[in-house]
Image 1: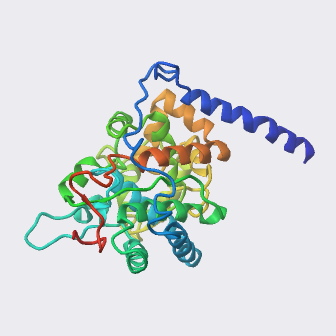
Image 2 (image 1 turned 90 degrees about the horizontal axis):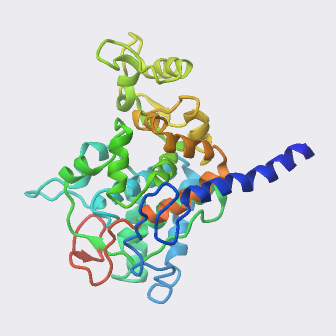
Image 3 (image 1 turned 180 degrees about the vertical axis):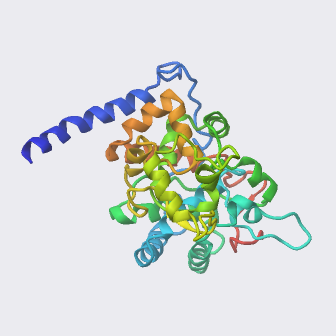
Length: 350
């Protein structure tokens, strides 16, 4: 046991060094791979403890409510994290996803096919209602969602896993057509994923780290069923999928007639759907990535190398936090920006 402890203490800093090296930027703003590193669009706009004076205790209220909800239902952590993801990749992190459709107008983001299975909106509504009574017209829905996603994932660690910079305001536009166009698909290849992430100033390290969110939560078999039973239209299985894992998925996703049951669900991480750890990457390197987009990470040498580094939970969690800070800052609106407001109700524009 003592030798194993020594080995872990030796390997952990080495792994972190490798991650830092991947992220290393030279004095001209380039990383080791020669790619230009762009400054986050949020710099100078968001800050820590934005509500310290205008709504003291706001972040504590969010955390207390979210932790209480997640304690009662651990499945809420991946649900809130997914809502945050889907919000940020469409128009940026402006809570446009929270808006309901209005009769006579174009359908909102909630109505887009990739968003129909989202849930957890009622928790954001509850938090907003409490904060509106305490500090009217002060705390944005966009900030509430960003904080709630962080706190939901952090619950099992009993501490915040990353800092959340606040000061966002809420968007006034929400279109299902944009969500269908801009959200990364579970069936996307690496080139498509890299392009979508790059459009939001997220690099390959962020792409791999944020894919690690699939270490918690479940997925409906209909999302990935083609990989199992009809990959090329000939009733075959995706050859890149681990054979034993494919057999397991078929048993979970098939009905008594051995046909796909699209409503059946499985954990996205075969090592367990509730623990936020590096199990996703351990499974991925064994060709047990659930989605085509997961398997796609292994088709790019750089991404595959990064995934191998993230098999170490410490390295993964550290980078996941950094990448979440970047993602939660995509195209943010702040006070004074045209088209932004602080909603009174997260489901409706003022």
